[in-house]
Length: 169
Image 1 (cartoon, helix red, strand yellow):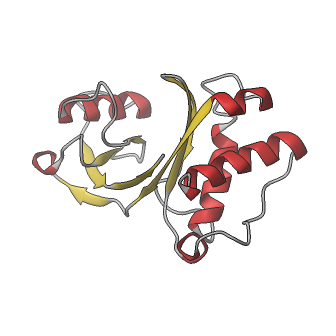
Image 2 (tube, rainbow, N blue to C red; image 1 turned 120 degrees about the vertical axis):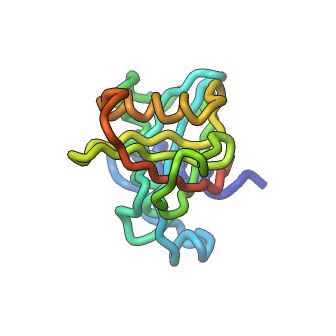
């Protein structure tokens, strides 16, 4: 059986594209998705190409299931890409990452294969990168990408936070 998390994300985007409405949490949804809260990232891929990826590092919904639904709909309209169309859905691979709560850390305690990272400037700008991404081999690359995403210059002081993910494909 296909993992429930990406199945839910795909179904949520499909429902939104067909009706313009948010999917209600299905009755057969696993208990964990109804009772726990967490930040979630949903990504859609067409072959090796990213088609959309949107998420939250802290929960914004009342449960993981609704977090997945909200992020899937948003990822389908990721502003970096053309919106996903209904006829693309059969070609897409869906990934869902459920995030642990971020914890303040030091650079020596990071590992890009194990931990995602959040880089936060003194004025509150934040850049985030999920762990274990292709092409990101070093902590320095991970931090540099986060700084670029947030518009934080290389010499600005920052706080570092790390988190783990439970990946569902």
